[in-house]
Image 1 (tube, rainbow, N blue to C red):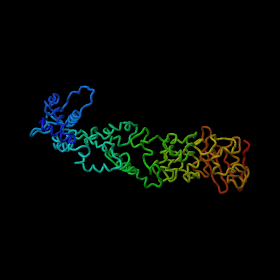
Image 2: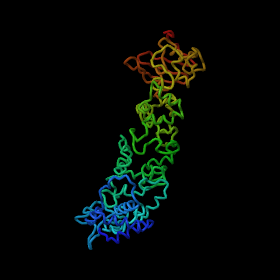
Image 3: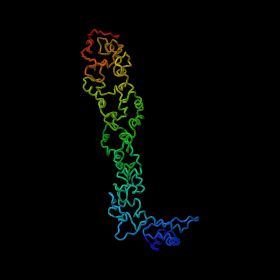
Image 4: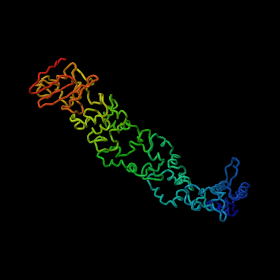
Length: 497
């Protein structure tokens, strides 16, 4: 764009009113009449440029400083005058403008002058205003973001164009990258959060704005809602937490205590796989339990597989210890041990703990040093010489004196007169353990007497009949034997055998 000498002189005087007119006059003469400046005016609309000045050992004069300032001001924006009837978009200029899928409003209506002033503006790109002042002239609803507690860095720096193309884009909201918001976010935040084995749903959909407000928020990390309510906006089924009788403490405090909101290498986006995650807190709460689990010789399978949540609901429950089933813990056990469930449900007589639904009276659900995850020692062999230690488990409930006295009229009803038949069965070289005769969970005969007992590869049938003062037992091919507390039978047994 050409200017007359007088116009150039007035521009300089206007922009630098604090400099004396004499110095400006000299600077004006240098600018206009130098061969370099004269050459630069040859092409209308061209931005002035000149070769680098020669190296000198003397300091620049005030005249040269002013001249440089003038040239720098002219370089900030230069655009040729539009001819009458000419628009910004033509085959020669900005030919593709307005053709993208998403177009900024002023561009779509060919109203470039809303943002640009090619005649008077000194700002970059000839903008009518700079920074947020330009965008907020239309997007007034965004002004409130600058009053929020947490502001996104580009917004705070008034760099709306850091994320949005001011003219057009193939992506929604005129994002500079896409098609998803995540594609844009990773240009600054990196892609490490989307490279996990298990990703949070919004990241699978590549929609960071599902959880974060891209402009500003009253909450840390630019969350779209308070941490207490954000997760429940999608995970509505977990609102039961607020109605459940027992709620896991981390859930009441923050979901991110256990879950990574972006993703992780553990299922359910857990910050660590179970049980390591659970141990982080429970090592402090109940260190003895954690030590017990780690040292268990016979682990409970869910615990061995790191599936604490197999039995405990990690969020909330209406049953103590956050059990998934209840109120009787036996219902939870039956969800895996269905063969015992069928046996017990069809039985007429139940062992006391089973009748109360307490599997843990005998079994340790976290692990044990004993077979079948039993809480206390019990003989693994079917036949054993008598040793009270072999019956430690049973003696937790049953009186251990039951088998100590050969003669009694009070310790047990299983006697012939005063002869203790428990003593007779146990105190032998080939003594019978409790399970030789009794079902441990439930059975179909009185006193939980088994229907059969193992004998090599054969199961010897047992038929027991209770009488008011005793009973009768028929075992396989053996002669039937009976006992009576009031009128004892003569027994042909070798107590030493």
